[in-house]
Length: 353
Image 1 (cartoon, rainbow, N blue to C red):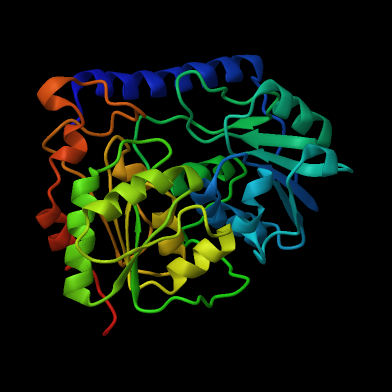
Image 2: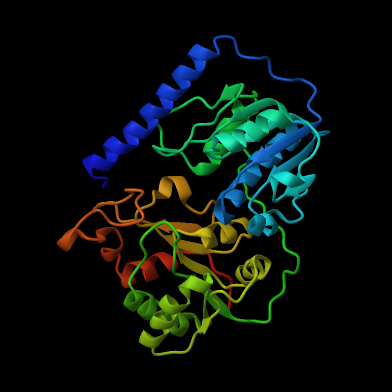
């Protein structure tokens, strides 16, 4: 159940999008023709693991439409490994100073500021963008075509594909891609739990501890916790509440090692974070618990996945901190009990032990 104030915010977010698009069309009454001969493409998405994995269907659709084009992408330096060995990419840039030459087509997949938009303007002859953005986020500058707005809530994969629909490119192939340098890991017979999200509230340490003990006993598997270095204290507190043993690998793996760890997991349980998209891309069973995020937008995109969200309480406010107080504080996650999660996990199609 989305509270009225958050429904109004959703509506206002889309309304601002419509207003921006209306102003764009007023200032661009005659749209520049779509280029026919595209030999080089530059995509810019300065987001993170989940966003870049979700970019892969769009990248693939572009390559299928322009099979002879060299497609490059600019990503944050620490995110380069996410797109390692992607067959549809010619080059991965991590700094604008690395980019030389000119591109026939520039695509802005995130709310680029004026600096990034100005850079793309200098480097690309034809420019399009962007997917749905927040209230105060930019809507893209110096573009020849913008994504047509909508009030409909869509999965982020569809949001991305809407960007290239401005080029009359359609695709129904939404599967995710992720390529590993080394698919092996030193660990065996384990379940991965990723308990922290950068952007949304998480479950209680007590619940994670109870769940971890129950899973270890039920499936006779080790429990491995993953996360960033800053997540170490939170996970250590979970471990103190556990009866059984577990392994804390937060901050101890590279991105590629993290991917390999998930690739070899029995299954993954996580909060609404990148682990769900890594698991989905690698066809590993995954259950994701959603709090302030909207599972319709960010749920793991695979057949063997489950997104848990209690629709009977306040959900999907899209806030990093709960705006409610007293008994309603964090009801989005507090209302989801361990037994419910265990029940959902039992619905996964799990391999024989």
